[in-house]
Picture (spheres, rainbow, N blue to C red):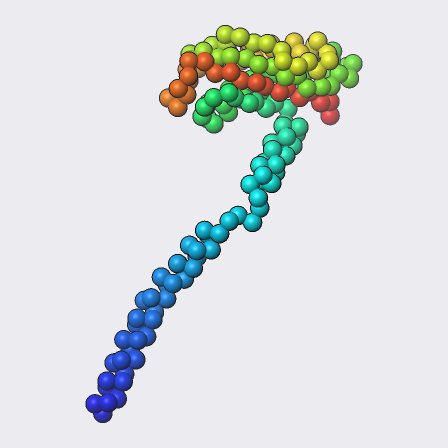
Length: 164
């Protein structure tokens, strides 16, 4: 009887130790698996991201690129304000004008536009003018958030005009 008790005790200790140690081994294997290199080369990932961005810009009517640091919230508010006042001139629609206008504008720390210029034309003065006017009419955009450590913010915008 005494032998049976000792065997049961040893077996119980072994099982408890096994149960307590096993999750740590599983977690260690999971961490080791995460430390392996990504299955895709970094350059391929960058190319995929660039392709996604270019597709998104082609589908969107309005997209922006910012030089420097800016919060997503500030940029989304800016984009919404411009989109709200941006118009496709009726005369351009009637004539079938389509194209992409690329403009660059600079904001001061208070959110006022201090420069607004055409970078590349759509080929149609009406569309180019409408994009520049949209930015002017949407401003001022409000003071920079704390995460913007610059005095000015340079933004390049793409205005894509497509007749549906």
